[in-house]
Image (cartoon, rainbow, N blue to C red):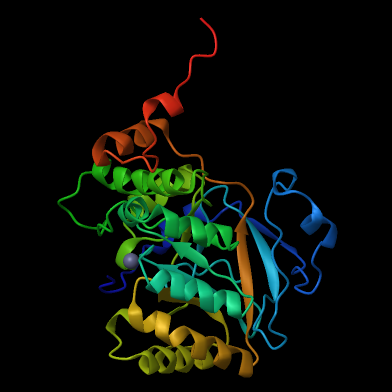
Length: 312
Ligand SMILES: [Zn+2]
């Protein structure tokens, strides 16, 4: 679903990338499982304890960084040049356009097998089609942002400013609806097209923008091997970077096991990016989402089992 990378006016970037800070926390040791938590009844455990990594040769997670998204920082050297926080041989895995049947679950399995993680940028509409798949992404501990409501290219002159904002805001509202919780204030523009006024707008919303350092062009690949070859060729040239992939695509899902093995073999380490605080969606768009998509509720229980009079 990507078309062609656009360029952004450098002056606009500097307006939006001020006031950013990130901090690090040591990567969680995969080998230590809280045994006591496992013995507790499920109701007493606030969040499911992550199982220890069963793969001694897993790619794993090199380090974890936390992003303060105040002012809307931009990441990814294809468009944003100011925040160079990755060390040599460090990568961030990012996955766009999901959630999607088969391919997203396959990507999740591969990441779990390698005890590693990525940032997912789902399309709002897709999130409303497959909320249960997006919930699996969250349950696996991955970071989730948004990639607009309908994957509209926001540089399209036919869109009014209000329509562009709606694409951004309703995308976040849809992801929040699907998850039952607010995602990270992390956003990726469709087709990496960055209209300067929307870059400024995201800054006012304290939402971080993610371009990439290297595009796998997996949406153009004719087979899984091509995804690996293009990615590794670019990565070896740069030595590090935020990698753009699509969990939406079959060949990407099929390529991922070998790609992650190759990253490990070549000494690359995955950096997990987390947000300091979740996004604050706007109530207007939360309501609009409910009106527009007329979302079915998952429950098919009769009203008498849902609503009970307990006092009159
Ligand atoms: Zn996309």
